[in-house]
Length: 333
Ligand code: ATP
Ligand code: LTN
Image (cartoon, rainbow, N blue to C red; front, side, top):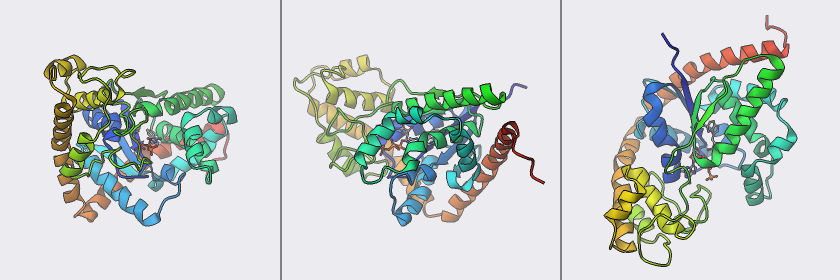
């Protein structure tokens, strides 16, 4: 029998989950999951590269786990776990850090952006973050990693590190491929369509959160910034606001940009914004309700992340053992 391929991804619990993370990542995890051995985790170790309030981090970790399940990830067939519960992530990150170049990390766009935004806390973890991400992926011998567009550069670095290690020490790692969706890979802020919708954007109405109330969702879409002119046409350079709304509508309904243009020909921005708002509201309603339900049963959620970590540890331990052997570390008694 052919071995099943491995799918892996994670999201930092650094803020409440956004519509961007749903379309860019989780929706695709759920759609691809059936064909793969799946590992999905909550990247709490990544989250502390930016200062976190401990109580909020703990609450969001559990909430994010509930949201993964509410978005359609099956905890019976997929390993769902918390990154810090599997200590091999940190251990492999150290080994991989020793075959990652300073210059490679210096070129990472996310590091440049985040260090500019947090100039008072440019810590070493923020700099070596992509090495930990490479460890997350390579520990599980992942074949495919579904992420949004902004993570593509980190995936390329992961491939370079894996190839370098395999070349220097002998084949250990599977070389992973990114999976970046055709629509929804880069949802922009509803208030500033020149910038990515982001957890760290505090502008009112810029972001839509998966747990937002129907009122909040409708308000955000009605107030979304659009462009000059009045026709609904896909033109990211000339009409970034409308094009972003079309991306969202397309990702939510599966309709092509051409179909959307026909559906709204002769209608104005107001009608279109209301239609997108209503579609997103209906998309999020069952996710919000299921999340709220799951959060009532904390013991169930704890049992999921415990068995997820056990499954993950088994695979992680095997890979780390091979790495240590190749590096020449003495065998443990
Ligand atoms: P921040 O936006 O604060 O920098 P982040 O980029 O770390 O947070 P995450 O929620 O950790 O955002 O990202 C989780 C996943 O969602 C990643 O795969 C990322 O590529 C994807 N993603 C994040 N923002 C968007 C977006 N605006 N559009 C599409 N995908 C996104
Ligand atoms: N850096 C990612 C989160 C992340 C991740 C991973 C994604 C951490 N480790 C491994 C895929 C695979 C982000 O979204 N900011």
